[in-house]
Image 1 (spheres, rainbow, N blue to C red):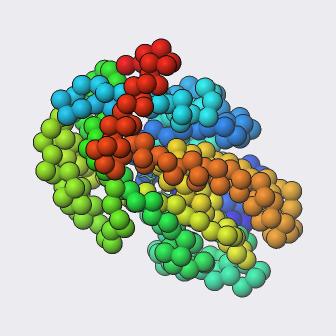
Image 2 (cartoon, helix red, strand yellow; image 1 turned 45 degrees about the vertical axis):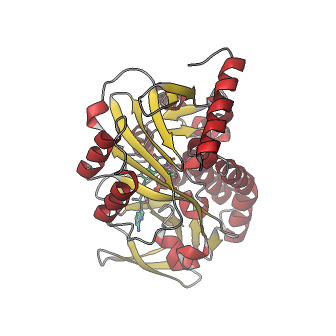
Length: 374
Ligand SMILES: Cc1cc2nc3c(=O)[nH]c(=O)nc-3n(C[C@H](O)[C@H](O)[C@H](O)COP(=O)(O)OP(=O)(O)OC[C@H]3O[C@@H](n4cnc5c(N)ncnc54)[C@H](O)[C@@H]3O)c2cc1C
């Protein structure tokens, strides 16, 4: 089949790799001018580890392992450690692999066949599915026709919007926002990764390899803003965190001001009854974003890509059967990951002083029970 994959994030790259390996003629397009590799390290867990092995990339993932989450601690405004993050509540198994986003993207990108280049700076402008193929008009003005279009273009997927309707029909805001900024001033520092809370807020530093990120999280109802406007995103962060001068908050906000690649988004989920319509099918966050609080977005992306490719291999001439198999095999993993995310906000950003105190007391008790982590 001649297949277009929209988006070169983890889902798009994995889909490109799996479909190319299955013998399809695949084109991957990415709106950005380069692979978007910033962001905090992400986890490959559970069944996704088996898929990684089948894809032939497990050893590379293991060799690139980092331990950012394991080293996370909650601190007070003076920088003193209050409690450790309960990683035993977060990880599926000890085999889980935490890996820098750039390393995962690099490994998946390298796994694409030489005949499957990623076309950067390109996006779908419109698509028309006539039942036998999909005519695509690209933002560049070029046109082409495909047997199948795979939307792997993230939570704000244009493929979903053009095929299934407005984002608002599928997006559930969980009540939080997240931002990640490059923090050059903290590179190379040793020790644990500190996170400071006040009610409804968390700000901290995540270090891995020789990199350092400022991490900002806060509770807020849905904010209507242009999510392509970086200046607006930064202003929201200044308004939210700017009154706080304790610990290293000003240093992190200074980094926000300087970062041309700041990552900022609502913590939301995508819920859809169907991930496919005609000759258009969705994978990864475009289909079923579970949010960063699930810690399972990248695993779901890799799993979904593999299951879709497998279904296309099992039913080469019958898209209905492809979609049915993809749905039956993948839906339970999605439901589990989406459910896992829900309590995550209360753990990392308790809403009130009382809830914060309770959380810290619980974590201190747990640390004592398991032998006195920090
Ligand atoms: C820059 C960035 C940083 C992130 N950081 C974190 C993090 O720190 N922690 C975390 O848990 N999750 C993070 N995520 C989300 C995480 O990567 C996903 O939840 C997970 O990996 C699933 O990946 P995905 O490929 O479905 O979606 P994404 O990783 O969101 O990838 C979607 C890709 O599609 C591209 N795209 C979007 N619109 C179009 C379009 N119209 N045409 C073509 N391409 C398009 C995007 O540029 C992106 O490369 C981040 C995502 C991005 C894009």
